Image 1: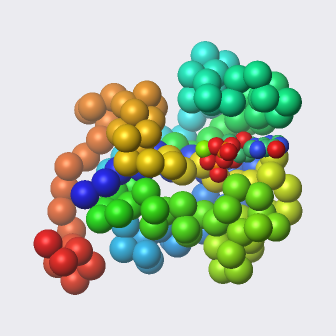
Image 2: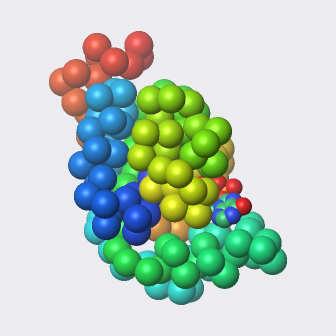
Image 3: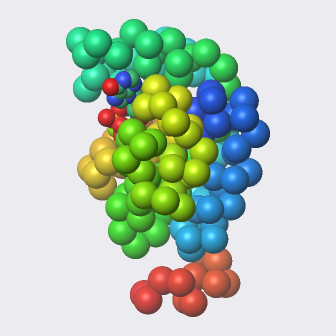
Length: 150
Ligand code: IDP
Ligand code: MG
């Protein structure tokens, strides 16, 4: 079982796509483990995007993620990281597969609607950065046995 941080970034929230993102992840079979609607401060933004520090788009990226509220969530499931990134689509919307969120709702890389963790290790790290332990729910769904093999 893997976990991924998922953010509906400020453009997704402003464009009323929070429900759409949740719907797609729910329908895929992933299980929600935590969620909070929040305004991201500069410190969290800089820690979350530390790997991009020094890149030409870094300042714009920090400004973007702190510009308005985000919907922060944790989704889990078997191979959740790869499955979620597939549902989101490639970073650059014009390279995203048809049917993916970034293909269907975005045009520009700097307004690409969502964030999702890029490896199981980063999934755990990002979940720990964004959520306190008591903000996460360990639960099972009646449908789990019809979605997860074990
Ligand atoms: P990811 O969100 O698909 O994991 P990353 O390469 O980790 O993509 O980049 C983080 C975010 O930074 C992207 O989602 C996008 O919002 C922004 N970004 C990445 N590359 C560029 C760029 O070349 N120009 C502007 N923004 C970029
Ligand atoms: Mg990334």
